[in-house]
Length: 112
Length: 114
Image (cartoon, rainbow over all chains, first blue to last red; front, side, top):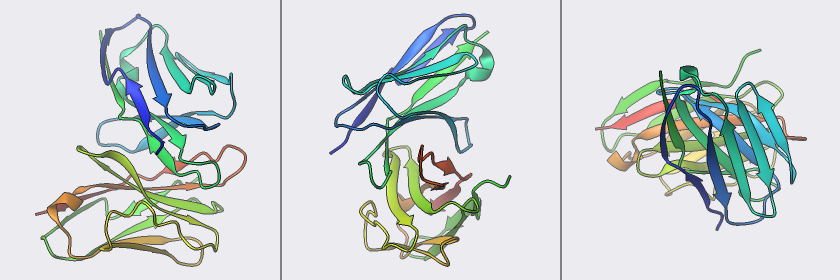
């Protein structure tokens, strides 16, 4: 059974600081996704990581994937209040069907 | 362009009643998924449709849940004899498939069973 674990689950940080969210998964998969969810809203796709060593960056967010370690990271650089949200990583349950197994989510709060 | 749409956005129903939730995927997307999000269980896969193939129902929690997809487009998720534990946000997603299989999510239907 594929399990996906994120840490931390809650993160409160100050504007301007850097931090990393970790996503570990239990079985082989070559596709990992990061989503953002604002309160009361749906999931917004942030990054799609398709191979070992993949790195994607958008603004202050950067995601990477190490398939050998079964680990993805979402790094936040010089955080701003607008990045406050819940962040989910998700992994294909198995390659053919793209059924996603989600982590628990990391609730990020950025304080001025 | 238009994204995934779902209706209704909110549904309150009495225990024991049946409900139908609707999803309109992005035009041209071949695969459609239903997930649900609840405080206790997080985000869970329910069912998956790919083209004209038989749906993958492996995530449905009980036989009270069923779904269909008509004409390869619109999908309806039906919950019969609703129970309080069915209260959750039901999310629909669709994907074009290769190369990224990126799933685009709709706004969700918040179901409350009283």
